[in-house]
Image (cartoon, rainbow, N blue to C red; front, side, top):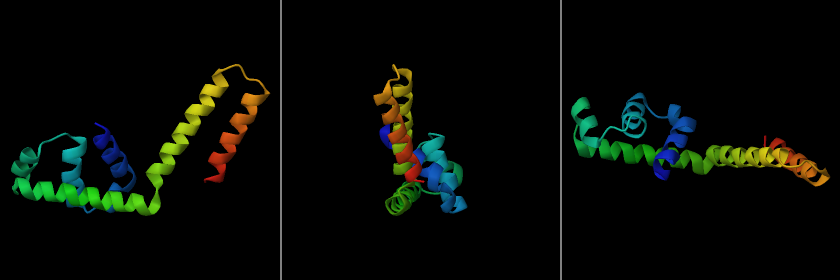
Amino acid sequence: MKDILKSSLLYDFYGELLTEHQKEIYEDFILNDLSLGEIAQERGISRQGVHDLVKRCDRILNSYEEKLHLVERFSKTKEDVVEICKLADSQCDGENISKIKKIAQEILDNY
């Protein structure tokens, strides 16, 4: 399940950089949860061809992430916001206020 989530996130961030044909097949496999055989039959291509294309798309999307780190930054920001919410929900003393400000400043510094 974790691989599907990662693949979905990578597709959300970088999917528009794939060709239309790659996007259609990758969406069918990752987002629409169709099997390789179902996609192959629907598209009139071999199951192996679908498998190779999905693997190629995975490599392409992972390559973009290695260079740009957008998913990594998004995940870190999301974790920081969750931490801010937890601190805000707890009793807000001076220490928690300073932690909230520090995390918020880190988020701002990264953008």
